[in-house]
Image 1: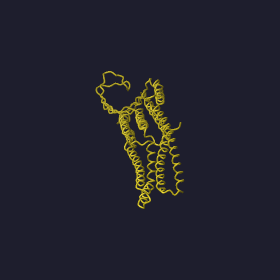
Image 2: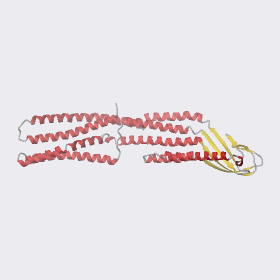
Image 3: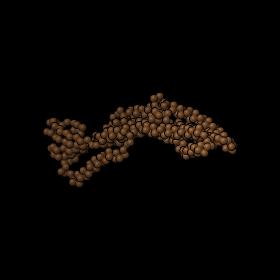
Image 4: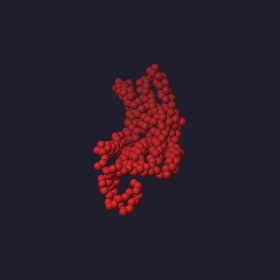
Length: 376
């Protein structure tokens, strides 16, 4: 600890006093600017807003100077206090202000911890929602593609109904054939409506799966978890240090001022650093190995998605083989002069549309689940 004493204020040059005043106001202005600067970018989620507000509250105490007010009664003989050997008599009022330079740095560290915690929480929430809605993995994209395909072929479906009604009116078709065409078109419209309802329900639930694979999201979660632990480690490693600058004034027996600089270090800090490093290392291992952590659950989901994608592709292959067979049958019927040829061709075309819509759905779902599941 270093103590600085100066002569009375009356004997100090006016320029020196003005320079000290400017320096004090500049320091206070810088401390007051730091909190407002940190609020320039508002966090999104309620959790992030809460921890950011708490960090601002804690850092405000670390950024701001501390004001001291003392009234000292001197004994008849001298005594030793934190500023050294002093002597006097009667009562001496004192006013002082101290700034902790290490505390200011800690305030920045508190805000950094909150920011890292927010990023970690966002990655955790995304993974948990994907795990909770594992049955919907890739379903939104598949339903969207299927719905687009069916809507694109709506004119063809309506044309089939109109042609069947025209044949019936001309006497070249039967009412049974018209009803059969209508039933097939209604089934296609029902499938489109079911896809719309499913998409609306997913939209209502509010969760939209990200574009990254779940493997990338897992790596992001683990890296952000370790980054958060490292920011906490850095902040805790500052605990042994204190570096305070204090200045004040006395009013008795004469108006005077004093100041001192104090640097302290707790010897336990020599052992704290290695222990904190081991804690970060243990947390990193925990995120990768613990059964209750995300990695184990994500790996199980990835295996499940890859298996499902294989099944979906095999089913889509069977549908493709069936549409090929129907297309061949349609090509074989077209040159003939069968009396119900228009009706048969229309039914085959409608059946191909239904099968193709299902194939588009299965292939899109398989591709999306493979992308979410990541590489083998």
